[in-house]
Length: 52
Image 1: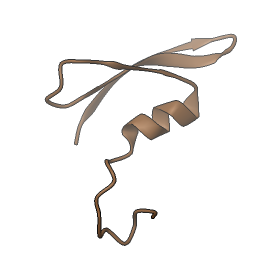
Image 2: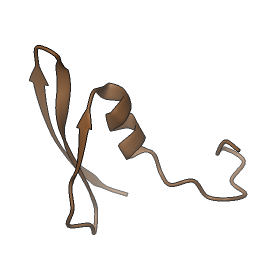
Image 3: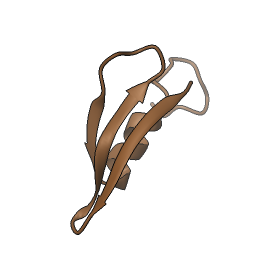
Image 4: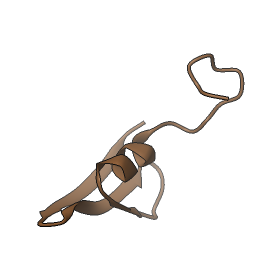
């Protein structure tokens, strides 16, 4: 999966937009944790690496 990350540094942290490959809508994020959540793959049932 590929992503386009448009990120800006600001005095209050980072913020920007993430666009997934094949998707026309960008998702906003504020901070590193939100960015990482957007970059995670979707939960797939039965994958031992995914949480419950």
